[in-house]
Image (cartoon, rainbow, N blue to C red):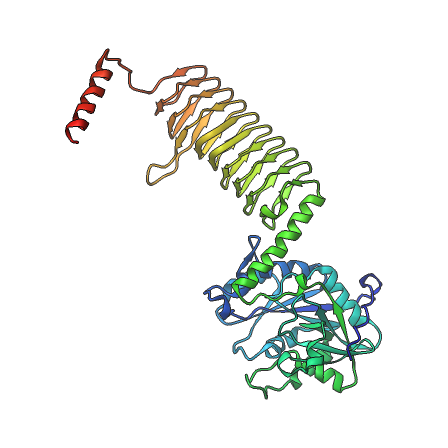
Amino acid sequence: MNAPPLSATPADLTARRPATAVILAAGMGTRMKSAQPKVMHPLAGRPMLRYLLDHAATVFDRIVVVVGPGMEQVAALAAPHQVVVQADRLGTAHAAAQAADLFGDGDVAVLYGDNPLITPESMRNLLACRATPGVGLALMAMRPRDPGRYGRIVSEDGLVKRIVEWADASAQERAIGLCNAGVLCAEAATFRRWLSMVRNDNAQGEYYLGDVVALAVAEGEQVRAVEAPEDELRGINSRAELAEAEACVQKRLRAAAMDAGVTLVAPETVFLSADTVFEPDVLVQPHVVFGPGVRVHRGAEIRAFSHLEGCVVGPGALIGPYARLRPGSDVGAAAHVGNFVELKATTLGAGAKANHLTYLGDAAIGAGTNVGAGTITCNYDGVFKHRTEIGAECFIGSDAILVAPVAIGDGALVAAGSVVTEDVPAGALAFGRARQENKDGRGAALRDALRRKKKEQG
């Protein structure tokens, strides 16, 4: 009874058959406690449904997504694939049946939008198993570290005989490590017929997709299970499970980055987005976060505790530690962005430096320019954003305040502590601060007066 299923036929040996993927995405996910549809919750900055759509598109000829009423956001994400609406949420078999008219010919696999991490390889193995002569139904299975309350797959001589739910299982059946992941694949016409036969005479009054297994076995069809890793088949029904899935995605992304020639000093502390792009020989120190839309070119170094989003880091550039690159920023080759420096919609030219305690927003900084500590581009007047243009080979002294819109020409110098409100010609030296005056002896006299006052006040 506890014999493992036979291995699926290798996907590359499978005769090509038309195949349709039906993705069930109508659930709201009440355990998520969110107004947002469950499949729109992000993993590594990308809605979880997007992963399944992208992977399925490399395997299946057609994709149909089943959504619930009022889920226009999900339907838009599914485009250009076909979408059908499950007006009444009456169970997973009922949801799959809403797409029955779109099954087409060939095979149909029913997948789950909240089970987004199945790889294309596992999908191909599922189709390969179904295409094995004599197999009427293929399903996906896993051996989780904690089988918990998953339904157990009871098999004999490599054939699935039944799926027993945990609540109904004997002690011997609960000891089975092979668990049902819920994904099914069958020939289109047969699958359509089985769905029409599923009944809702259960405690919840719902039509369950898992009942198709019993129907197939009752008709004498061979039912086989295809195993895949737990990390691929885990469902996401709560915030805690979302966090577990995020950890799986991050592990994949980190491994892919290192395989591509990136050094992650402490991989478990680096967080990537699904679209993060690295060239080889990038070095990433611990505790760095990459938001969506980041590209890092060859030889760049991202130092600890930096945060990057929507930006480009040029070859050989040095970022951080404790730097923040916001959307629209482009750091040139061998440029430096140091500790506690923030860039927003700013271009930093090749070899330019802003090494500490600086905000550069809506600015263009020329090649070789040095921006001193504490410099600020005042880009917002309360209504509009304005740009600051700084030429090449400029020197901007510490604590300079550049009030946009303003332009500083090539090779110009701005004295430390200046407030610059007018354009500075190329090669000029700009002072924009009050004249200093020294009053001989007044410092000591003031200090003595303050000490007397403090003494009088006890």
